[in-house]
Image (cartoon, rainbow over all chains, first blue to last red; front, side, top):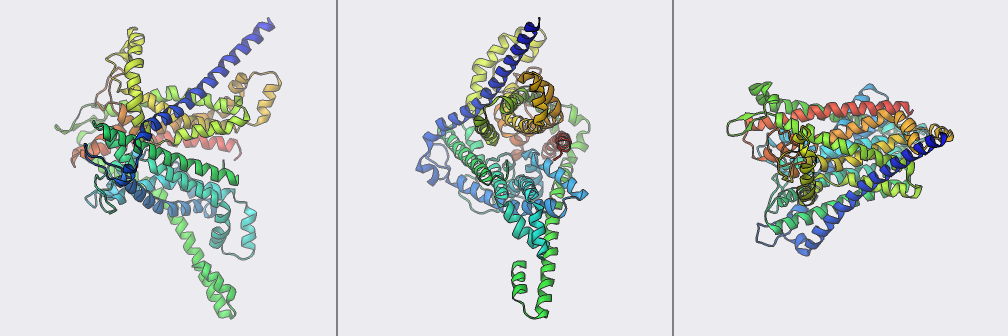
Length: 282
Length: 330
């Protein structure tokens, strides 16, 4: 009797254990399958042409130069907007307004923005930066990307500043340091690698973001470095070429996808290495 | 500016310079404080701005069609008649399929990581799952359309039609030809995409369970499964549900991957093998070509509806996770 009960419990435990193992194998196998298909289809198309030629109409050998440059320009502009904004807002939440009621609201709103659908952000930026000027522009794309990146930077900056021991702040203040100087010279320095990790993660997120660019930056088959007009970008060209009936454009889409994925994954791995080497963040 | 001011203060010899330098420091202090406060408020303004601008943009559609906008599934740009029902339906059904598969698997991986996995493998597997979360959605889209869709069309859908499709009643869900594109395909791709989010959050909340509780349960002879079922999950239930809602928020708003594989047909069908659309897929597909006026306004109205749905889901998720943090004493 007791034995039957015991073996039943063991059997149930065994079945659930197997299921947990199976779930993990299932989850990990997608990473392997997706990376393998990306390398399989994308690596063959990697050549000098990809980095030196413009996107071309079907039938002409083309590359992704304008898209790569466009992606870099828009991402840099986005980071340039989001980084100061995110760090300053995170500073307010962690330093000045840590216990204020308003901060609770802002923290909550920031967490909502952190996972808000990017396409909704795109629509908002369309209303804000495209409609008034009457045309699509890379600046609008950068604003949309900045809106996606800012909440990530706000969150990590606040978390990292919260990890800075108060004794450091007290020591600085006791020597008569003004609060703003204490924050910049002491707190930022102590939290630096964590804040940089947050920025890297935000860049990784921006690099692959497509949906909000469709109706802000629009895409451009020509080379353009003018941020006031439409500009090409890697995710947009993948979106366009992946649905193209021409094999050479499909191939370029896969190559572009490989480049984007490689960039995104190496950024997030770099961010993780950076944060674990200092042992500040998980 | 204040950095030079403090240098000035250090080198100051006369009391006049000293008070000037102090005044400049004070001024810099106030400016910096105001800058941080302004940035923080801007975050708040951004969310309000999203809601207000979308509401303004969608007002023509709401005022023209009224309640009909939510009920009608007719979407006809030439006739200038727009209804959101098909898009809302597709959004909800794809997300439901994604949750049905992604949540149990995701929680299973989290149980494996916290209870079963050897310590040396814990970090690499955790990172691998997090990398899966980092892959941009456009990659899931191109992979879905070139690899996942043919598999669905060639093997999974014919199999479902022949087995489950033959059952009366239930067969309605699996009726129609195996097209490859469709609601089920989109739901499954979404399931793969939300899996790492469910895992990451479940793992984090599982780790908040005090070891003493688990050790006590193991001490009286519980099996691993019993510890998970009787201690870990009840203790972290609110957090797990919060994480699940967060993943639901992702699934509802996911755009690129869905756009590639759902087929983009503006109709409601009982079969989950049929082609459909979601709110985000519709906006992504049609917005760039939409005429200004009622068409654009209707797409903005779809965006507003999506914003409201995800806002409610995400707000509930954050409140639940916050409750767990209070409990964990963080």
